[in-house]
Length: 203
Ligand SMILES: O=c1nc[nH]c2c1ncn2[C@H]1C[C@H](O)[C@@H](COP(=O)(O)OP(=O)(O)OP(=O)(O)O)O1
Ligand SMILES: [Mg+2]
Image (cartoon, rainbow, N blue to C red; front, side, top):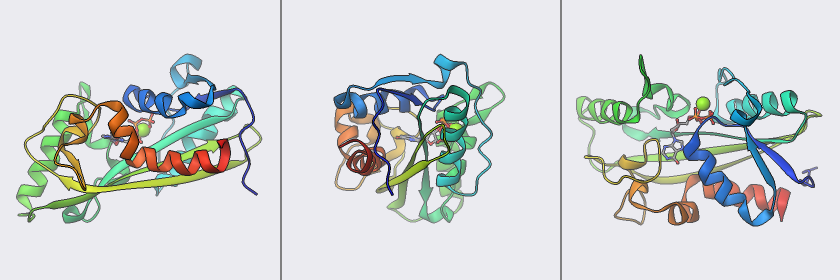
């Protein structure tokens, strides 16, 4: 049985500021007090699952166990067809540098791999977002959303986060980084996953 969310507070189990801002906007209509991993001093758990859903579960259950509160996680990434679905669950790893995460580095690396592979245009890809809402008693609910599009070069736009400057969603001639948060939140992979979460657990 799908469990409805009846509480008034939720931990957003992420360390990513860009995601947190989008999630806070998506949940704003429901009047739930949100805290995040940083507010509770929670470490970033090891995301060693084989799927987005595995990693979303790892993150949400770790936060729910540690805080005794329901927790919502988001595991996301881009799967590029010409790269056989890479980086997929490793999307954040491609940004790792000795100086910390650098998404310009990750986007250049992505472009370099596509050039080296001689990938034809359009370079089709899908952004995936998998949400896990977990309760401290171990129950959870998982929902996924996908936004198809293409990887473009050069980078375009300054808004958003992560790989937004090189992802152009289907049906648009701008990248996610050229959309304001409201526009992106109407159509994104994350918005699509939230539609399902909200219909099942909040509506
Ligand atoms: O809407 C998006 N627009 C652009 N890029 C995005 C988006 N959504 C995820 N991404 C990229 C960046 C992120 O680093 C990686 C997911 O990795 P992922 O492990 O799920 O997130 P994360 O490590 O940044 O934060 P956390 O695990 O604490 O929630 O995919
Ligand atoms: Mg992560």
